[in-house]
Image (cartoon, rainbow over all chains, first blue to last red; front, side, top):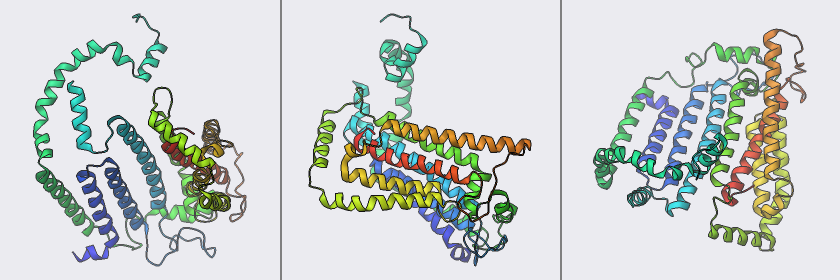
Length: 124
Length: 301
């Protein structure tokens, strides 16, 4: 258990991921659901950034002319986080556009009401 | 309706959603059977969802079990921040030790994402472009997607934009947006020398454009940025990116010898294709950000 306190970045990111997941399941408002999805994304970025850090080293930009792998932190997670951010922005925009269309059609953002209305209209 | 239609007409009807109406009777008949089955399968889940307390309890339970399992995994992960961790392997050493020699960029991340893994970044730019196009398909206000209330709101907004009621925002944007856009251009152009690059700089330029559009209205924006500009810039940048990378893959893989000179690392004109690629990505991201704003607020660009 003491390892959790040393790995506190990873532990925090995992808890954040769980909070986002709970938000995704419990919220009835569609926009709040997507906020939960974005919290999950952020947790993944935190986890990746924590994996790349090494104590006592500097950011991967040439400093003082040192070309040595023991002087800089790991640059690979930075690239992965960049990819993640781009995909998350695209997915969020697309899903919000879908939500806007749903709102125009049903006049509500509540998931349960949308399901009820759609069932009623289908039954007619 | 005549039965015989060309492929093109079929496609058009399908895109407009008329295909289902044409074959409505068959469609309903075909749907009848699985429809019934779906209703029989569902009620269990439905009852759980209707019982708020039980649903809430189950959700929290699932999430807590999930968090507990993940925390157990975290407690077995290697210690944070140690150089001997398995993530810090020979890939990282290669990027850091040979990076400047092979790419010419002193920002190792820029060298990585725009040279070693440039294909991946090309995919990302395509994802952004596709996201704007799908939002455009969903939200563009054309003759299939009109709403009297929204049109009235837009008209009111435009009248408000032309009036003098937003003077604080207008004066603020007048002095701020050029500075913001200039800073974005600086971040894009220094992508291979300092933190930043196409994605972050492009977002800053997009923020400047959004500020200008919010202050002066879409009419003012349309003087220099229309849908045509958007398509020209986006498609042009994607094609330029594709061409640049094809050239360097082709010459690199076949040892032709016409490689782009790397220049002196640290100069603004150095590191081969990274600077033009950064500019391309920055322009795509800026257009995308403004495109999202315009589509969500007004349903048009």
